[in-house]
Length: 179
Image (cartoon, rainbow, N blue to C red; front, side, top):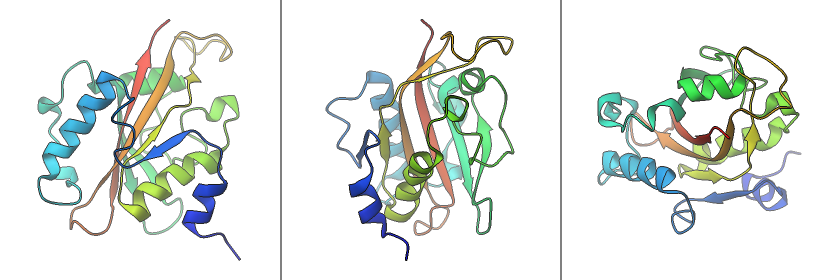
């Protein structure tokens, strides 16, 4: 028998905060992307993909954006849009690829179960998930992954829904820095 979502959340040690719990401690960049998402939803529980206009997103935030499509059959989640800094962190562009095996940190052996649980929380609870697990990325040109030219400090995953009921996309932003 599989665990309930709440049981999985309570037994996970992955560093995450649910809903708006992160707003008192997140970076200004994370706060700005949350305010953008929150402003789009208005009185709805969550905005739709069609509400997002890249021209309305601050230019300094765009490289850290990611859109993930929620599918009704395996592979369940697929990257639809991957910002340039997200691509650089991974050392390749996962656009069109399933999340499983292509998520940020897969190259470092970060457990996919925790990453997939973050998505599951967003999709089933229809709330944002803030993660603060720094991940080192690839060197430009695909060099050694153990050296750190780019790093993600934290990420915010937010639900999107075309019918304000079923989450059909996840809007993600990762705060990235070059050392």
